[in-house]
Amino acid sequence: MNQLFETLFSQYSAYAKVDIALELTAVFFSIVSVLYAKKNNVLVYPSGIFASIIFVYLLVKWELFGDFIINIFYVIMSIYGWYLWTRKSNGKDLLHISRTNNKEKIITSIIFTVACSSICIIYTAFDKFDNWTAYVDTLTTAIFFCGMWLMAKRKIENWIFWIVGDVITIPLYFYKGLTISSFLYLIYAFIAIAGYFAWLKTTEDNKSHNLEVV
Image 1 (tube, rainbow, N blue to C red):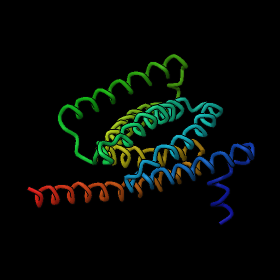
Image 2 (tube, rainbow, N blue to C red):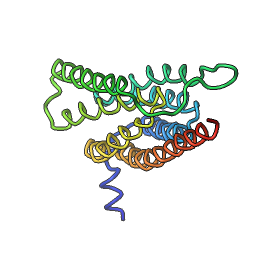
Image 3 (cartoon, one colour):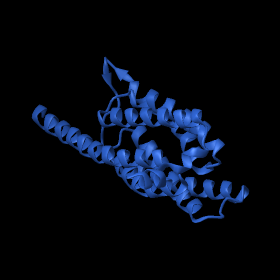
């Protein structure tokens, strides 16, 4: 047991206690944020912003630029999503859970392509393509960019991007030595699966309600 614990967490012996505390705090609020997302609650955004700001500080310190850029984007898209989710008309939300249309699928593809290209340019400029993890970082960054944009639009497909990105990130973060964050993405993956089915049920209930009204 001690050997397993040392294998999983030995890298933290070199970290400052304040950084470990900050990572644990960010992990807590990240989980809270995803749980709020599953419940389709706007509090997903303030809790997520707080966690992302902490991660931005840590990731810059640890020189994980791809992950740093992801969290900067999270903050920006969280502010955008917060605005969209709180828009109301006659006391009712203007934005409801729905599926992506063809136009939104095209926009998602553009976001993925632009994200990949931008990360490649940044990594090349900083000479960071010196390890296979940089290429995986590029892929996961683009995936999470798409997921964040689709969540801001309250599109059910956002969960598919989160699930795929989480599954890739779990072993990636473990390899990087970020064991706590690796476990975080494992939790993310399970919540994302539950979130997908919760949102799917909501869309089906809405369809049934609309048919009854008609």
